[in-house]
Length: 264
View 1 (tube, rainbow, N blue to C red):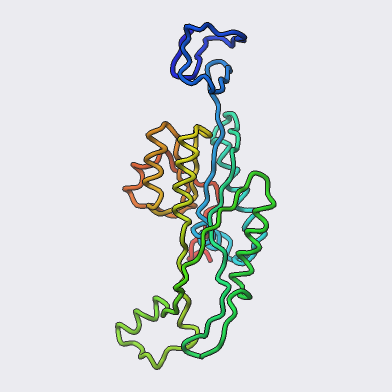
View 2 (spheres, rainbow, N blue to C red):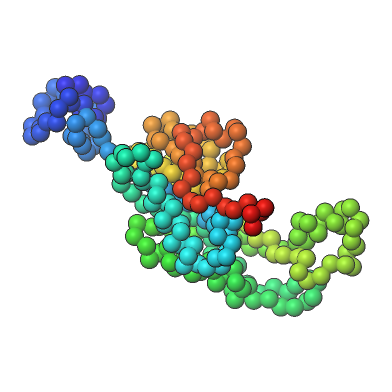
């Protein structure tokens, strides 16, 4: 019999009713799972909503604005992380956290055509609202919403800027479809970082799966890994910078691989 931290390691399963006082429990309030020496805890799955939507539309372009389908795929792909690649025991789910912002709902005038546009009635706004609504109705899913920056501005689309800089076109050649509204999300990355830290320091999980693809999560991942959390990144088949590998414990994707442009 060996006591280490708050886990009891046994060579054979043992039922314990009154443990000796000499065991000196480091955390008397902690739960003990006497299952032949293994302590099991659930997995939390965190999803960067903006990133997920971009990758979902690459994987299923025909359902780009189908909110119900996006919600079903998100839930299925997330839950797939609970099953290992082998025949091991299926992990328990703590909760799926989805981070996003409400869609743009203000009215603005296109600077080229002068036409008034009600963004609350656009295809994108309807899609986001439906996606959030569907996720809220699924078991063990929490939707964390940030907010949009108040200084939304019209900007020229990237490929048109390149054409302007190379003198392929002039400003007078721009049309209404060549501009878009630049909207920035606020509070999303902060909420991800706060939840990773909270789940870690409260000892609520021993594995965190993050569906994202940038380096904004690195500070929170460092805290989690220092506390012994198994931190897995799911970039949904998007390549990640080589430097990110040193900040995660594993890389795994459960969604289908997007078709290449050549096969399309």
